[in-house]
Amino acid sequence: MDILRRNNVKVRGSGPRTLVFSHGYGCDQNMWRHVAPGFEDTHRVISFDHVGYGGSDVSAFDPKRLGDLRGYARDVLDVLEALDVRDTIFVGHSVSAMIGLLASNLAPERIAELVLVCPSPRYLDDDGYVGGFSRADIDGLLASLDENYLGWSRSMAPVIMGNPTHPELGQELTASFCRTDPAIASHFAKVTFLSDNRDDLPRTRARTLVLQCKEDVIAPLQVGQYVHQKIPGSRFVLLDATGHCPNLSAPAEVVGAMKQALFA
Image (cartoon, rainbow, N blue to C red):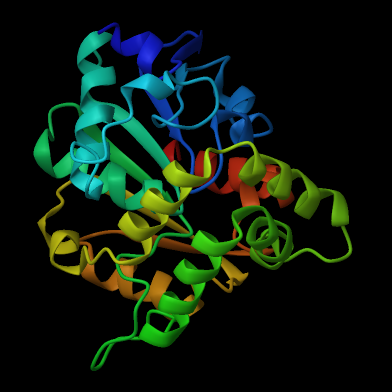
């Protein structure tokens, strides 16, 4: 299979190093349209869609191959290998933060730096760990998604976006969710919200920047701080942005934080 077609890979810009932008649950690469151009004058910029989203080849969706986040990480490495990319900076939003971290751990020669935007290694609360959700919360979320995906999308997207004074942002996220095949969305939701990658954090040797929003119902402040504490030598930036999607709600702040931390 043509990997670049499978993941609808786009390459823009030029420079000595490469930035890879990876979208979160229910989204596609279009969610980076306000951030990625800020680096195209100085970097080669790659964006793509996870299989089942955006312009990807939906026929390539294999629930067994993509049965956990490592499957998605291997897809990322397929893309980097197809483009012969090494020593890249991987920028992952939400669940893609862990996908990128796993990919870096699998092939550190491919991914040298990580920018983790609103990351969460585990969404479920555990003894001594605050993930933000109880098991009942997650079970209810998944059941609601299975029963009425479009209704779930319309009610949850504005909450996830977390910017009620800018309803157009919630509407955009709702539209993105609603474009996804419900069966694929349900599968990826289970893979995402039932994942536990806490043990993978201290294994990464990539230079890491954690970007955390001050208010986020999906990945609360305690989660971002936990990720920072567990990744050796990582840097932590608390954005003034609210909600779970600063790449849409506060793109200039994301670009500024990345440039200051990565290229200082």
